Image (tube, rainbow, N blue to C red; front, side, top):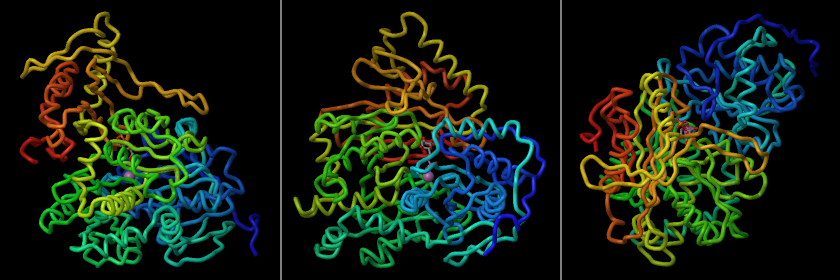
Length: 584
Ligand code: VG1
Ligand code: CO
């Protein structure tokens, strides 16, 4: 048996790389940036140094979505972990682990944290993005206190510590010794699968899938991301469905050249197959498996509705929630559909800033069970990350239950039932990608100034193409005080709330790898049944006009069209500044 002293720990001199500030979800940059000399090493050293309680003698989980540069980054992590005195590393075979699976492993193995190698839904490959994210011992993304510390260390880093180890073979599962490190290489799927089996009633889903005439058709699309093996284990091996029920299920380092983002634009392989083959239930997840899209023939579930509907059905049909749902939550720009469910059910509901890291404390304190974000993120306190596959199975469970109540129910029926009970929140998001940072910042500064000017609150903002006008009820920069630890996160998005309950929100993205992406969110609530079947785009038009006018977005950015529009009944894309209306 080896001991630490036999291995030569070396200290390597380095100089800081600028811009290593973790964003909404880790550090995301072009692969070429990570490949620069000492770039990845600096960030890993800073992460290990910033670990709460230090990293010496600790256990870490390492894995990711298998994107280009993951094997190299894994070997760097092993060398630096050894150099910094980490004692045990649990790795997914071939360095593959979905983000939810990392969170589950940290929790079940009682590890002290995890390093995730992913840029999530951003494209991969030598000319695209890589990313590194640090999760803490509860299995969730490191809070801002830790990420700020990481950034601070990167700003004046002078050295890092490593043990010069040969590359470890990551292809075989088992227990190994690698220099001073104990290594456990695990099958990426089994631990996660048994967690899901303890949460859901798979027999009820099977009963619906196999004993209904005609048999419900199902299609899962992993978009060549990490969920391929998880999808196969669930749809084929557990639910006993045909091979044809899954597609794009082999993880690829560049996601087959695609954009592993589950929305109606980028998951077109799913959308086309569902429409062509009349599939009742279609679903996709993103590169690292934490996002999901639910899409059946002619029916698209917005993420804001999805989380509200799961929250509404959970206690009734998902065994994990049988003993009760503790509380609900959403990110600030997510529609208020879940708030209405909470109110009717007498549950606490929280509004947190964008990013999953803000849900963890509430879950740890036992006040939050189910939460979501408008950006295709849905999850619960079974782990501390959003969980795409979990959300997909939750929808299968709901459909199985709905079919018990009313045979033949499909996704549209579940949606309509929900809106009839609670009203409908129309929601849309416009993304202006890779704008010039200076222009985007100026637009935000202009809005801040406007919000502070006297008379803005109470004023009427009018649309350009109609007589519609909206009275400003409040306008501010969203600030959040964590109810558990009292930490304050400010400047989390500019919102205007109107007297009729509608909202418009402006945020700058924290996940892009270059330039500034402006996100504009609009929301309107309706209890008029005659509107429920409508496309959100029409009803929201006056609000969007108001948003563009008040922000002077075009003037500041030169953009007259967004790149991506996500609407209640679909996402349309403009791609490289193309006309989004042409692409629906
Ligand atoms: C986006 C989404 C946010 C999500 C984050 C990470 O952040 O808006 O809701 O939590 O991505 O998701 P931003 O700052 O670009 O708006 V993932 O699937 O990339 O881990
Ligand atoms: Co993701």
